[in-house]
Image 1 (tube, rainbow, N blue to C red):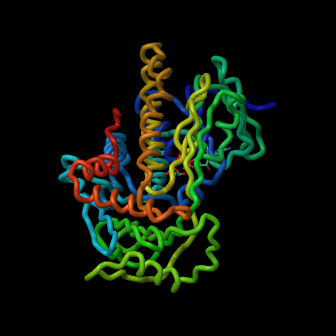
Image 2 (tube, helix red, strand yellow):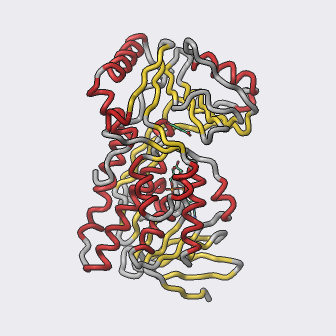
Image 3 (tube, rainbow, N blue to C red):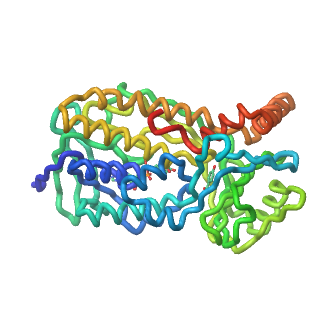
Length: 391
Ligand code: APR
Ligand code: PHB
């Protein structure tokens, strides 16, 4: 017999979406339990993106989990776009009225959130097995799972499906309810983490004949670099010297040097976009990667997950305070507006395998426009630092 437990909001997944949701609910006096199938160490060491929008930073600070991020994060007020060997800076501060981005790894955000949940006595259960979600079309949804060999049934008022793209929540929605939109891009990203001080203070996005390249960073000692590659690229065909050589070629600009260093990690990321609509069915609410994924180009996945959880937490708090459910009913529509806008902002710097010379000239014209028109630069900057949370 399973042991019966009860909470207000049962949350599947201790990634950014689940942890932000749980902590925001706690701050409003609402009880939640998070169940996660991986170990705490695994979740806290999983290397992902590292760019936080202004709204994400502000929210983490408001939630009281921003101390280390403020200390260790690198604030950037611009990025460089590089093509034809020339650099063009997009000045966020000037173009957005003072906003910027913060470079701080997703797994550090996850550590800070987990520490905060546990310090506040929150229940985050790691290494649970066989998670399944039930009865969310009625008033008493349930999450079933096993921990240390014992079966549990957690009855709740609502379920937060924060279990990422490969989780169990989205597939548990009955067939025919969700419409799924998908686009798989005909290229991937070969990414490396290198023990080398970043060769630029700000991120550099390059459009080159041989494909896109990006210089990013994690800290003042660690660079993160990417090269556009085939979607099924074999990492083993890329010894370190070949990677550095290709980065030198694609990122080249007059009077600028790329600093090399030992490569700590390398891997290929496939690029795809996915959106499931609506993001809710009955009392099951999907948030973050479980409902949508964006290509890594804009580094928006974490920011979208945080935005969803903020909107969901507010809607749940309003329901518990007033009994009204209009914010809950509007959850999906509110989130999807931002999600689709971010899909739209999925970048112009890649070379497509099937492009013709016309496509290439048109793409270069777009880059020329983005870097020379204030209106176009402003639009890019506004999207990059992140649309206002209320958008
Ligand atoms: N049961 C319990 N937990 C699960 C299950 C399951 N069946 N399936 C997945 N999980 C857990 C995963 O182990 C992971 O810790 O759910 C969590 C989902 O977290 P993320 O994948 O980080 O997704 P999300 O919180 O939506 O954050 C989105 O993560 O994928 C990146 O780049 C993406 O930055 C974005 C962010
Ligand atoms: C990263 O540092 O991982 C990163 C930065 C910017 C991007 C994508 C990824 O656009």
